[in-house]
Image 1 (cartoon, rainbow, N blue to C red):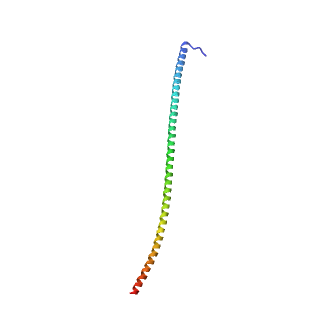
Image 2: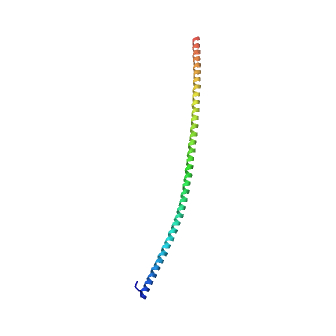
Image 3: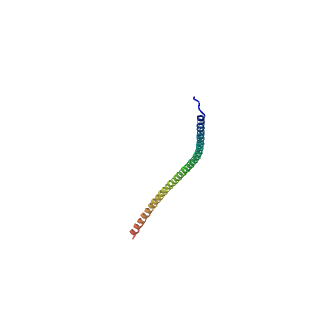
Length: 130
């Protein structure tokens, strides 16, 4: 290496000092940018965690709502089945009562026919006597 004179050496030292200052400033900027990025990541993780907790809570609420709705539907179906069974029972009772009344009316109709025959016979006998 050739020998440097005092001015060249001074310029080289100043240039190196400026380079070191620029490098130090860049390093500080990089460190600050990294710190900000790490803070943003931590904030994002916290926000994500909160959003996931809210989502889990919402899904749990939805599951409870669906379970309640399904239970209500099952109760409604059970009530309908009970009501339908009651209607069928009452329909059977009504049919039985209807047939009982029909039989009673037929029995009475037979009795009325007998009475009418007797009346006709009596009426015929009365006319014959006159």
